[in-house]
Image (cartoon, rainbow, N blue to C red; front, side):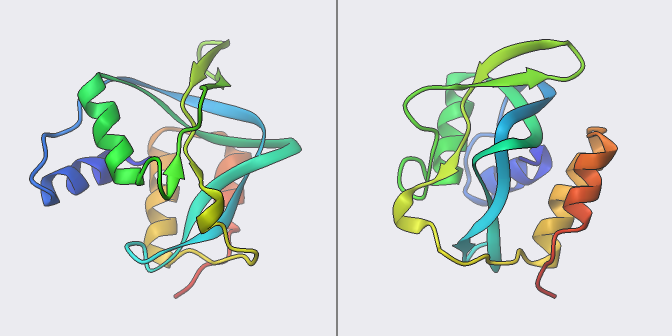
Length: 151
């Protein structure tokens, strides 16, 4: 999740700005990023993750207060379109060499499409710029840059 994008979204809805107490670059082992959800707001595919042996997904773990967790839930459409599931998943914090439990949002079954839906260029660029800003590993950044997109 891009922190600036989250703040823009909150402002656009007249909601309180998110309070991110800390953020950490992290790796979700045994999952892959897929583009199997069509987002009208993003004008194309939106990111999802699904289990996949020998794969990793890099992202940010956010430490937030309860109000911000509820804000993120609302933005992600939890529990309708995306759900953070019943239990947090183990994620590896790369700069701290430790594993923590974190909520991971995944598209709900009702909204998963069988085909790949390429993301819009603007959305993919948002994800790439966030990966650059937070110094994701080069292989994670290169994989994002290689993602086919619309426009």
